[in-house]
Length: 458
Image 1 (cartoon, rainbow, N blue to C red):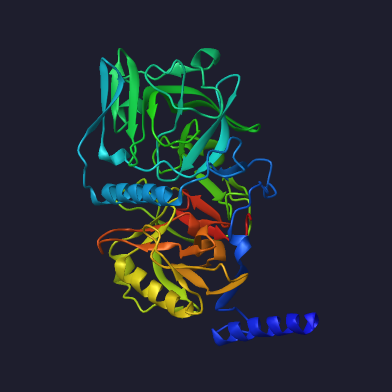
Image 2: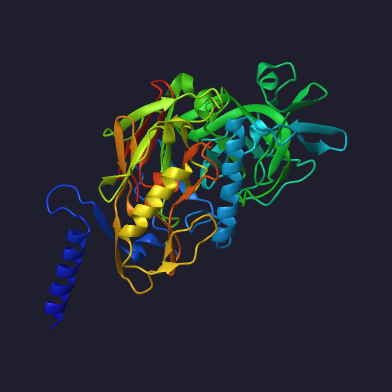
């Protein structure tokens, strides 16, 4: 009887796939996945490192982080994601919130202008600063351009972090940048304390950092060490960094990490974000580690030239392309961003995606919406689920999303479609990090192209 039950179960699953448009030969338009594979485990199961020159990437609130913080509140995380998205929209639209003021001390204040507002990111790496090198676990973010870490003596305020605070007095190669230096003059938000340059950054979620602009040795790996690396030495740091020592920017400005290392590594980097917080990915500065990479053009947009624009031209759901005017995406543009969690689409595109997805998922009971996620399901009575395959169509490239790129899991009773609609058709689209998971995503600033290679990490 058990054998017959197993055979019947397999046959029913196969018939289900066929009835939803699956193909016995060639590419399936529906996928099947076990619910448990979408949920992070309590322990860490690191992926195999792809090369000795890459850095492990972990979610900063997961079990693979060296000092994991408390279990994240999903609604809070989604709310913070919305703040980041609002900041990106303001940067692109040129709308200013006005000048906030961030303080280094009672005598010094620095205006932090709207061009520096962003959220604070989700993934961390461990790098080294100073001579001898001191390890610091930092957030990396393609939407940011200022590198900084917390530093002693922490003149005003520092939050708790994993490693000891970096002490400039213990580094033989540390020095402050002067106010007359070009690195200081090119800062969007700067000040001076005597002849020493000060930087200031305020993020969209209310976090901020102010301190001395500095130069020191920077260590990526044992074979990738860089002198004269420019970064902020934070003396007044507040906000939602949750144990990270600071932030490394991977934007398109002259002082981001990739730009500062371009002379020896080329202005190219790639990363693979893990499928869940209980696994690991990697960041590589230099040529991509995988040879099978498909590329689409990287677009420079004068509204925000340091962000990575990409030409999204369409979406398919279950093998059928959504009927959308080409101007839906082209009129506003789309960026790809490591720090945004949930992909944002123009209202017309999201409405069509949601309608097609819901039509293909009628066999599952709906669950309550979760913040910005309005299409959620209760899978408590399902061990395996079938779902319509979603493809993102870019110029010269199609990206087929795995299940972990389709769903955002709050619990087995609330598993949501990991897309949301913008509130206005004039707002840019944003490809978030859920839709980048398990791909090696390459940012080639030399050839001006963005590449994807599937299955690069688990």
